[in-house]
Length: 200
Image (cartoon, rainbow, N blue to C red; front, side, top):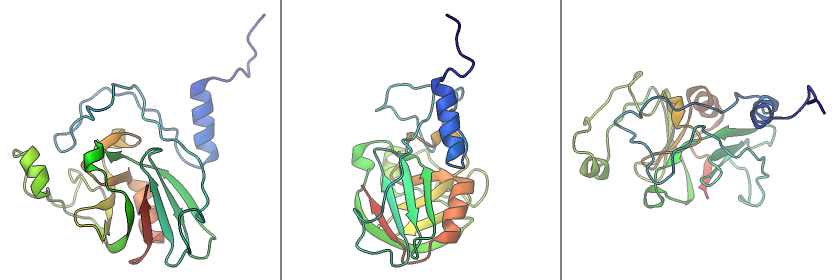
C-alpha cells in the first residue's frame, strides 16, 4: 500500500498548529552552546527541539476579574496567556522558564514598571553562583532582557524578551520569564502598570 500524500507527520502537525495560532513553528536544532549569562539547563536531558505546550485557557479559573488585564504564566507548559480588560484580546505566547524549581516563584504579582530598552545587572545570588559575570550590561543586542521588560512586584522578577531564541520553550532562565522580542513588544503594548500576573 502506498503512502497517502496527506499522511500526517509530527513536524507537519507542529508547523500547522503553530500557523493556526498565528505564530512561528517552534522547532530549533541545537547546534551552539548557550551564552555565559544563561548556562545550559542541566536538570533536563538533552533535546533536539524547543516545544511549548500550546493550549488555550479561560481566565475565570485563575482571576476573579480582568481589571487592568491579566497575565497567566504556566511554568509547566511554558506558555504565557494574556487577556485584555474588556476581553476583546487573548494572546498565547511560548516562553522560557527558570532552570530549576528553586529558582522558580509561583503566585500572584503585578506589573509595577515597564521599560523599553532595559539594562541588566545580575542579582547578588547570581553573582554568588557566577562571580565571573559582568556587573552591568546596557541596552542592546547583548542584553539578556531583550528589547522590552515588564518588572513585577517581586524584586528581581521580570517578564522580558530575549535575543537568544533557542531559550524559548526551555528551562533556561535564572527566575524570569522570557519571550521572543516580537512577542514581548506586543505584550508590552497591551499591558499597563497594574496588570495582574499569576505564575502557576
